[in-house]
Image 1 (spheres, rainbow, N blue to C red):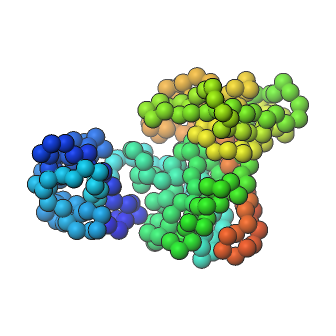
Image 2: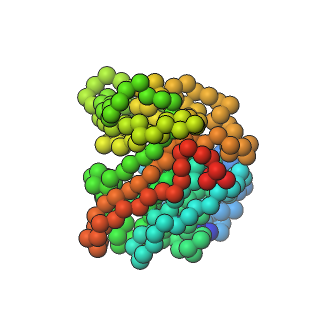
Length: 303
């Protein structure tokens, strides 16, 4: 099914049990809890529940284990993210934006239209826009999207193979060291757990962290990740005793801070910015380097 108003159809993998129908499986899917039986029937009658080949699905048909069906969901009510998504660069293959804090990269959970992907699709009037990588919702900065399906894999591979060089900036308390500190450990994140954890085992997370400036607001750090574990930079800064300003998870969970954006309060962003992105363009061979215009030392550019 093609995207509708910039939003992709939802894919549901059927978890069949004895004598269950497709309708039974859909009604038992937590992600579809907002759709009652009547709403599912109405969608099926309109041909808006289809299989992987795009054929309409009969809700009364026996469910087949691990097969996929697709349907459009009602869009959730979302708190608008009142910040712009400036374009830093665009050509026929890619568009590079300067993502603000609080805007998710792509739809997930209750964040759907208030995402960089859906905004770009609507602004550029193209459902072909796709992310080449992602930034956490709370992290601002340089983010790259592709504009043509034919080139998508080439740009995504830059990030999968670590050929894209990323550098971040963060605001935190003053360091008690000089020079660059390399943090090497093992980070794992369990589904359902908000926080990632450092555990025993082979190293899978490496970051270089350097204090580069002291300001009235705090110290500014250059962070260079050599791996891409979830929350890696946030966890590594906290482990050094200099947690990033505005972090609702590290070193301690702060529900009051985490819930502010849900109530329209964007006054305390995580002071972490994807400052620059450099790579050799896999299509043109041109060396590219893009830099964010956002500063971690002030929140003025997020309003």
